Amino acid sequence: NTMHPPFDDRRVRRAISHAINKEPIVKFAYQGRAIAAHGPLPPGQWGYHVPALAYAYDPALARKLLGEAIADHTFDPARVYKLYAPSTPRTYLSQPERVARYLQTALSQVGVTTELVLSPMGVYSDSVGRGDHDLALAGWVGDTGDPDNFLYVLLDKDNAVKPAQNISFYKSDKLHDLLAKAQIETDVKKRTDLYKQA
Image (cartoon, rainbow, N blue to C red; front, side):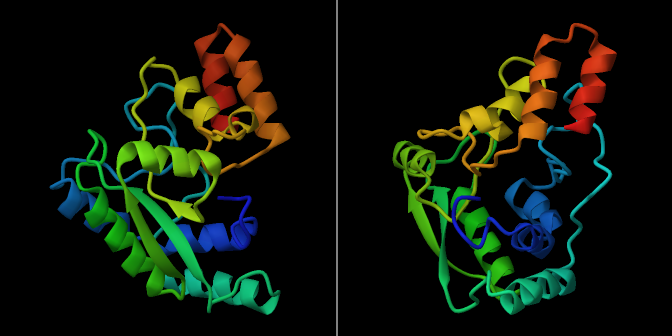
């Protein structure tokens, strides 16, 4: 939740990404029948591409980035951050508590202490839509076959208004402009390029 310090600090968000090894999640929570994400679009979705900047599992780098944030007084390693997760299984997340506890352990190994807040899907959705969380385990199933259904819905500033679908509350004018252009572009190749830029 970028409205909650220290997650307004890009280094802290990057550290969180580098702290998580996705392969055990694929192996144990999905029995190897999944692909680790490299961005917000799934590999089968048109418009997908491998991002230029990937966040590989690198706990040493995660600790370094958190150390920089500590030195700048933007990250408090003594604070306990709330990690929200649904207790209700979904098609895209059949074992939410198991995955959430794995994330909790991974984060603790780089110095991020979390309290796990598990709740049924309706309560969870209301809580994260209000922005109660520091961190949240979430998933998405696109229902239109269009990249806009992922990128605009989940990451645009228009949807960072409570109750939010953009539960990271990420806001970027540059991203908004790219997504708005893609929404009205009719050429698939040009739209794909706009999504790649986004």
